[in-house]
Amino acid sequence: MSDEWFETVTEARRLAKKRLPRSVYLACVAGSEEGLTLKDNCDAFSELGFAPHVAGLSAERDLSTSVMGQPISMPVMISPVGVQAVHPEGEVAVARAAHAKGTAMGLSSFGSRPVEQVVEANPQTFIQTYWVGDREAMARRLERHRKAGAKGLILTLDWSFATGRDWGSPDIPEQLDLPTMVKFAPEAALRPRWLLRYARRLQLPRLAVPNMAVDGEEPPTFFQAYGEWMQSKRPDWADVAWLREQWDGPFMLKGVTRVDDARCAVDAGVTAISVSNHGGNNLDGTPATIRALPAVAEAVGDRVEVVLDGGVRRGSDVVKALALGARAVMIGRAYLWGLAANGQAGVENVLDVLRSGVDSALLGMGHSTVTELGREDVVVPPGFARRLGVEGAAVR
Image (cartoon, rainbow, N blue to C red):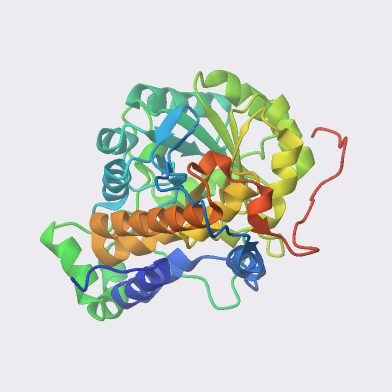
């Protein structure tokens, strides 16, 4: 068996830590302040148990489902993650891996590869956007994404409050000029395999964000785009509804944890909701998404699709999320670690690990399809769930 293969996402993380420069690895860890939410996102899954059957189990199991009109081979999709300096092919390698495994790709507007390239690699691509600039600027970017063939839009609103980290924030440069390369040379020298990947392609890590540019503009750097986002107004529900009207396809709102926000999202006309706290890289102390999921799913019923994003490391986590009301999950760090460990093959490896785990858990639950999963399949301890928000809150 090749030493490139790994059997768990945890092993992929260990390999990523060994192969990435320290600053790049820390950027993949993320989190904010004390890291309470970052930790709870993962730990909460271990508080949930299963109620398996022992006889009459299904000999064949169908893991397929659909999200925002796209059929996918299993209830796991790629979550949009910004600038991916872990591998030279970045989001293109991730898109190819997702396509090979029959699932959809979420591409960040802060990604390192243009949406046109990513759609070519995986036609089932959803483009993610933040609210940056005014309505005119937003409309221009949407037009580019529409022409590129993106199958859906993801509006991210769960990243507004991220602050410092007790373990230290990663040192991310503005650009890779000579002084910067000299500064980071010791880190890169300690990870020759990572450096060799870029050297073979005669390129440096991409720090620009091409999907923020339109009409032939020069792509801004990450920090230029970040600065513009910081200075932009925070959208209200009227803005969300307006943006929904501008996009004539499936529309996901990412970042919902409160039941009142979930209902406002439905009223704004969204197609899907992602129960997300930005992987813990936001307001620290926000409960794990799996704790907030049941109440949000109950609040919206079958009016919109609900997916979960945050803390998924095993196929059994996926099954627990589906049993508590999610249609599918989105993964972020898990696939980044696979990308760092072994490029496209590493991402495919992660997806295979999750698929196998979903299949095993589905077998134990005695179901033949993922759509049959329900609350009776999991053991939920008292006080586990969190119902955030208030009924009948005023729209802001």
